[in-house]
Length: 502
Image (cartoon, rainbow, N blue to C red; front, side, top):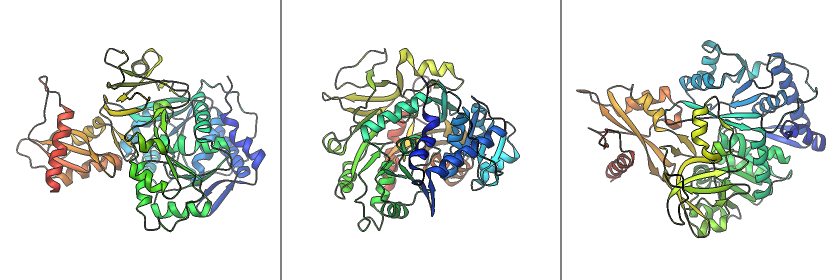
C-alpha cells in the first residue's frame, strides 16, 4: 500500500494556503509557507546527500523548523530520528551510534549537545538550523513510499540502560491518524496547543502529527510555562491539548486559571499516568472534557486504551478500554490468558504496533512474541472491560510522563563519588506520578554526600532522570542469588522518605 504521509503538507497548502498552520511566538506560518519551507529543507537534505532509507536526526527544541525538517525527510524518503534535547552529551553519542544518521540538524540554544556535534561527532553532517544556506525549494515528484517502510526511530532505554530505536512505519503513523480522527473527531477547524516537546513521542506524534494530518493549526510552545499556556489558549482560541497530568495540574494551579477564558477548549487528552478525578472535576467545572489514554512508543504512542471524562469518574484508577483497532490480552508467565480480575501482562495487537527495534532482532522477537506486543505492564481487567495498571514487569519509572529506566541511572551513579553500588527505584509522588530515588551503598570508609551524588548524575544524565532524593543504606534487600529485590527496596525507600517528612 502507498503512504500518503509525505503529501499531507502539500494537500492542506492547496486547500488552505493562506490559513495559519503554525503559531510560534508572534510568528504565524501559513500552510503555503509551511509547504515552501518543507520544500527548501528537502532541497538542503538532498544537497547533503541524504537518500531514501538514510536517517535524519533532529536535535531541536520546539520551533517550526523541527516540523520543516521532519516532513522534508519524509519527502526524501528518509527516516526521522527525533533526539531528546534533554540528553547529556554521553547519552546523545549512544543514540547517534545506534541510529547512524547521515545528517543531524541542531540549534545553538542546546550548547552542550551542539558542542558535541560540532567538536566530537564524526558520523555524519551536523547542520546548524539557524545557519542553513538559502536554497530554492525542491518541488520535484515525491518518491513512492509504501506503508511498511520505516518512518521514524523513537529512542527509549532498555533494561540495560542502552538506547534502542523503536521503528515506526509510515503505516503505523497513518493508523494512528485514523484512530485519532475517529476517537477524538479532529478536523481542520481545531487549534492545538503543543506543550509537549516535539522530540518526545508524545509531542512528536500525539501533539503534532494528528493536527497536521487533519489540517488543523498548531500553537507551538518552546518551553512550557503555565501562565503562558493559559494566555495562548485564550489568545488563539485553542480547542485541543494533548498533555500529561503534571502539566494540567500546573495550569490549574496558575494564578490566572480562574480568569482565563477557556470556552474554546473542547477537549484534552492526557496520558503518561492515571488522571486524578479531582483534576477531571476541576477542568470539567470550566467546561473542558479530559480523557484518559494509555499508550507507549512501541504502539505509536497510543492511545491503545482510552476513556472519556464521564468514565474516569466511574472507573477511578482505570486507564480505559481498548481503542479502535487494538486487541488486548492479559497473559500469565506461560503466555496464557488470565481470568477477569486476575493480574497479567498487557499484550497488544493492531496496526499501530511497531515494526521492531532498529538493528536488534533479538529484542524484537522477545517483544513481539507470536505477533503480540508484550508491554511489560501488569494489569487486571474488570467485568466491563476496563483495565487497571497493577505494576510493571519491567522496572521502568514514569516521572512526569517521561520514562526512566533504573539501569541507565545506575550506570552513572555507580561511578559517583564514594558509591560502591546503587539501585534506583520509583517512589509515588503526587506531583510527578513517580519520582526517581537513588539508594546507594558507600565504599568502605567513605562518607556519601547526597548533593555530590546528585551533581555527578546531573553531569551524565538528562535532568528528568536525575534522582530527586539520595538515600544512603548499608545494604539492599536481596534474593538468595544476591539480586536486588526492587519491590522491597521501593517499599523501604518510601518508608524512609515518609519518616523524613514527619
